[in-house]
Structures are given as structure tokens and as C-alpha cells.
Image (cartoon, rainbow, N blue to C red; front, side, top):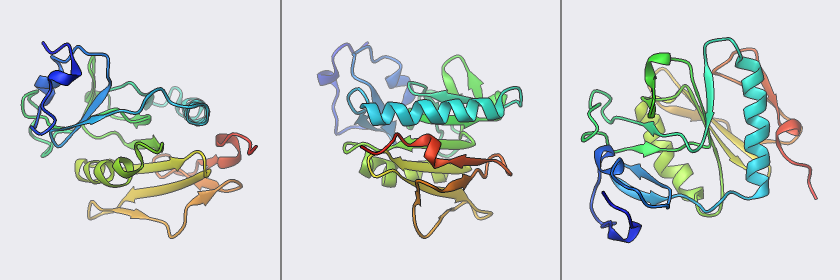
Length: 200
């Protein structure tokens, strides 16, 4: 058991089996075996966006077989996907929101495998990670739809997995006033005026 974050060697690679032995208070993610510390407590803008999106998605999918989860919720992404033993899994992330439509991926520890839809809310500390490191692992793992939201700028970038397994995005971000189509739930749109808090 590891009870102090400072006991960890940030230069080495770890697995999900190691992750399960960590009992310190800091919240971390593993991305390709490397430790990434999570941001401190989310700010008000972040919490408003998460709360509003969760409510909208929950009400749309209720009773339909899919489930929506918010952090903290461990998503284990075996890379390659056949490596599902705890000591072989080297990527464990906690998306701000994720939607899982395959109940076979859910267990008491979270989600094993790619969610259908992942939403990350940017903060200054996570911007690079969400646009590069997480983008790459989500694409590789098979996430179908990835949204990145900047709550302060009130913008949304949408990436959708194509037939070749690559994320494809639009030329510009979505803004307040836009209605954003959900690729996970065709025919449903998210009204960004309902998502973003009012501008000061």
C-alpha cells in the first residue's frame, strides 16, 4: 500500500494493479502508465457545466439502456483492448462526464473499455492533457464521440470517430446560441444556451 503521493516515482510507469494500492488523498489518472495529477476542486463554472449537461443527458437517456456518469468514476482503457488484466492495464482516466451504452463494460470498479461518449471540461491545468494525451488514448481505445468544453470561453469542440477509427472534428468550435447534434443519440441536440452559465 502507498499512503503518500510523494512515495511514487513520477519517472516510472505504473499499472492499474499499482493504482489500486494507492491510498493517498490526491486524485490521479494513469495515461499510458504515467501519473497525471488531477486539478484541485473544480471551480463554479466547471461545476455548472457538468451539472447542466448531466441533467440534460440523464433525462434524454433515462430508461433507454445507456447510463451517464460523472467524475470520480474510473474508466480503464486497455491498450490494446485485449489486455484486460489489472497488471496490464496502463490507462485509467476519470472523465468529467461519460456515457456508457454497453452494460457489459460496467463493474463495481467503474468502466472497463471505451465509453460511447466522453466529455471533458477544460481548466488551465488540464487543457494540454485533454487536447493531446486524452484525445489520443480516447481515439485509440475506441471512444465514439469526444467533446471538449472551455467553460470560460464558452466554446465546445466535437470529435467523432469515423469508419477508419480516427476522430474527425469541425472547422470551428460551437458557441452559445448553437444547437449541437449528438452523434451518440441521433436526432437529439444539445442547446448550448442551456449548458453555459450566463456571461457576467
